[in-house]
Length: 476
Image (tube, rainbow, N blue to C red):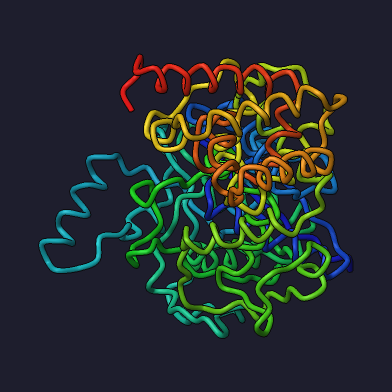
């Protein structure tokens, strides 16, 4: 049988980190087994489900590089099948109609709390033989004795006594299915062989196994992943910072780095830290996932992202950076082509951790006119550099456009020798003149990327600034 795994999110918000890891683990294991990865949108809660959230799920998975093998299944479209399953369970005696009102159920729970008992449905309607013309829900008739067990792919043997499970509602009074019934019906219809999901679904699995058996359906294998924690050891939440996948995309993280980071949350492969996608697929085994919670450490993600910036294919990075600028609406005010953007990525990738930081530190390439940092200008654009800086301006003007780092190097070094200056004594004033800042990539790269005419314009402005300081017009 072909392995078939699925990711089944509810479309009520963005794709969050926990869901993204669930999708990734299912996708990796499906690809590792040579199987199929399917997508189901669990949208039976029509009031909370939105088209925007559905699109966010699709876009988040696509950004992560996770593809699916069949058209997504929308759970609400299978309501007739869910109703038929509830009717089958009623017919076979595995379910019953419950006419208890909300107030009656609340009174039941209050009495149980008063006696120190666990609040739960007490089975009041389980043996009821009449059929009044009143609203009802359909409840599963959970076996009252014995236990239910399964071998978890991650946690090992799991057992619970049946008397710990109450008679769960399968169908609401309006005829719509509840989560557990819909999931079992749909997983069976999709021929799912492995269900890999979060630790918080363990209790659902016991209940669902009862439903599989009562409906005569083939049970899949189950695996439950541990929680993801924040740096403080608490369950990951918004107070730890970004939690949705697209928040990290907007912050300029790379899909490959996020895949790598998520894959390592609970799983490892020896001492290997960095994986290509093919390496992840080849190595990933759900049986090697640990059962202890994992910490989503932003510092670790930053480190991974920096590594991928430095080591990924430059052309691929350039395409991703261009998409990032476009998606975030970051304006590039100068005429440019892809090769120019590629130069920026090449110059900045050793100096930055994310695309957001890269864009921020490349603002002087993107914008005109230039804004001078006052402190940097006061420190480096002093009267003593007036002549060397003017000579640099004239030397660049004499070179054929476009300027290249290699072509600029010879006249630059000649000016240093002529004035007996060390590199920094001219490079720093030139850097401030061309970028407005004392921090940038190498000065020859800066000159090449900035381009001849903008270099001349910015050097002219810097020379005018130095001259005003020399004449006392500006404070020295």
